[in-house]
Image 1 (cartoon, rainbow, N blue to C red):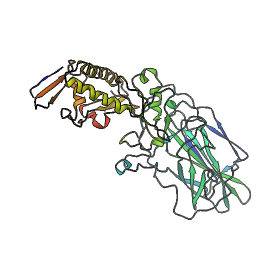
Image 2: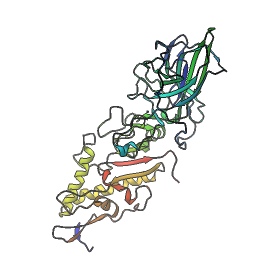
Image 3: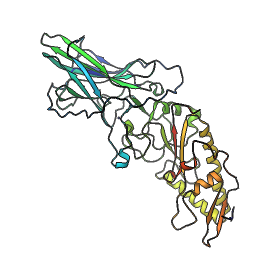
Image 4: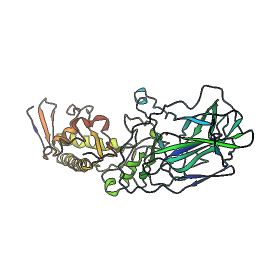
Amino acid sequence: MTRRSGSRRLLAAAVTAVAVISAGTLQLGGTAAWAAAPTSPESPGELLVPQVEEGSEQIRDPDGDEEALDPGSGEDCEVTDAAPDESAFEVTAIDRDRVPRHARPALARSARDDRVSIPPPDEANAQQRYFGVDYTLPAGVELTCVRVDLLDTSPKARGAVLQTVTQAAPTADGGEGVKSVGRGRLKVRVTFDEQHPSKVSSKPSQVTRIGYRVSLYGRGQDGAVVTTSKDSASLFPLWRLPAGIGRFGTRSEDGDDWCSSFTHGWLSVAADRALLPEINDVSGEHARNLGHQTHLTGNDLDTFHLYRFAGVRAGAAGSGGLNYDKLVAATKAAMNGGEEGLRQVRDWAQTTRTRLGRLIDDKNVVRIYYAAGSRVKGDSRFAVGWAAALLREGAYTFTNAKKERMELDLGIGAWSRIDNPIIREKDFRTDHNDHLHVALSETKRK
């Protein structure tokens, strides 16, 4: 009713990636058996593992400034029984690379490099990541092979090998995944390519931390084989969304649905999945920035509106904006005294309130953003915040063409959850007019 109102193969190094993927085994004799190893033991407890801060190891460019050495042909290297070398043969450091930054300076600052995307079995990463490896080599020893293993470093997993990712002799071009980039420095591939796809079949929700073991193999002048290895710092794996999740919006070539182990587990529960409509962005591959200030941990979900107006198909291009336009149109009609417009806006507000309440009641939901409502070209009655007012207060006061103060009252009163801490007044934003944003946390709210 409207009424007037008052006012993400080195020579002799083996890198074991610590992730929640099935362990790949290496066939002795020179060829890689890219077979999935048994999955890690299932965690008997709940999925909520307190989040660990980004590792403290130094982040370096894997490409060194020194002159590259040509260590071999690049064919699959032979890994044989070797004795640990106790002299100067040692992996001294493993440093991760940087995920490509967003082209816009303001968004380039929103980035992190401690997330690695693990593709489903038989699939490869679109964007490869290469870690830098520093090592020392004793006189008279030739570096012959490098192996990188992906590890499950989750609590209780004890560093189980999920899969051998790379096994090769170092070459100048790094074509097989191990590149010599300077004396005592290598660049090794730690992700999955088309020739060596993922065989990880572990349950995503149970692989919450991963790492890499880099193993180097060398041969001395007497023919004896020596080896040394080192594990990287732990990182966070990202997984594709569970099968069957409805999507809307446009898709990124390297995927925009990479989610954390926790979020994957949360969405695998039917009751939790039912809280959300179709999903657009989660995180980019290896948490590459897709154009957001957030979405860097696999725990932020952009979803469709909680209420869909008639005639809007969520899978259609621009459907989020179209749904918002329908809200604008219905609000205009209601301001003009139209009963059908008023009914549509009332239904939108009541349904959205109810579904927001269910999300607020979930202790793993820590923040929600939604539409504030923007000015409408050619209609001065719409001020920034009009949609939030209708949803929160149940009414919106505006000035009509005659400069009269009017009120659009939906007749539903103020929202009973108006003072909730999850979607506060300032969390209604104009850059979320066309979608809802839901942020999850591994640690439940009190």
